[in-house]
Image 1 (spheres, helix red, strand yellow):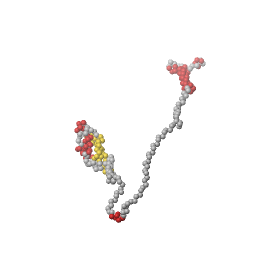
Image 2 (cartoon, rainbow, N blue to C red):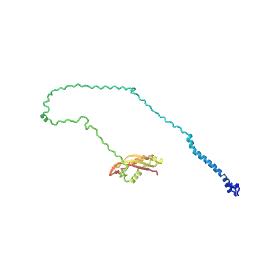
Image 3 (cartoon, rainbow, N blue to C red):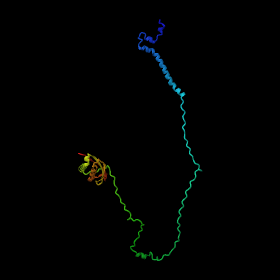
Image 4 (cartoon, rainbow, N blue to C red):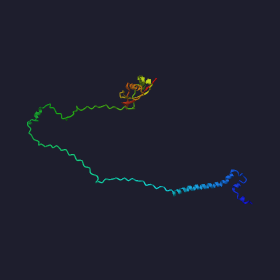
Length: 258
């Protein structure tokens, strides 16, 4: 029969009876229950604290009482009718006295020497009698200033059905610019080159008017481009719906050093 000591052997002793107990697993299994007990106690305290914190807070913590908002009440002082004194009325200006005209009784006087006035035989002898002018006196028709009608200037169009064209087309215009332009000496010395943009209006008769500089490059090139555009021959005018119209045109003039 087994002795009392053998019956009370722990599970670790039974498992490691014929094994190496100096190995770390034997010590870990011996401390397992102690670790479990400590963990359970620690978890219990944490759970208790989490549950009891709201209860303790609700018992011992009291929120501050709200402070009532101060309201400002305005008081308006109304004067009694007795305190308001009536303003003195301004004296009325005296009415101007009307000039009195004395009524004079008309006196009837017998006319003398009017017996022959308006007789028919005398009227027959009157010929070529001038008729008096019954028009009211004042400014006559000849004295009135003459009204001068000023011609209405039409606003130039930007885009029309048939745009104005230089005589001979674009190639002829390029030849005209190449032969007419004279490169300014100042621009040559300074090495200035580029495009000068000119705007002008092609009138109904093809003439060039309202020549303006839009953007220049300086050095005398702007003045030269304006001169050449002003001396252009008449263009073929533009038309809209079969009617000749004024057209605004923009032209770039190139200056290039060679």
